[in-house]
Length: 83
Image (tube, rainbow, N blue to C red):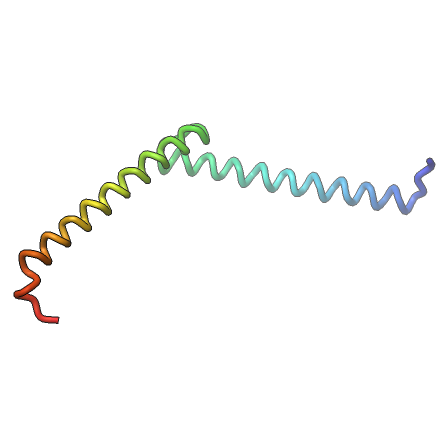
């Protein structure tokens, strides 16, 4: 199957567009990885996922502790507060 000039130019344009998209994605990945390293000290996505899991657990514990303390406060001082 022979490719005529118009088809060739279209294929070349598509190839260039794909290369541009690839280069843009590579740059975004590089920037994201640099940010993970700078802000969180993570060198890999696996390290970032592990840190995220740890931070989510810490946040859940802190939220539960907060709710417990709010309940204690309301129990102790709720009758003295005006709304």
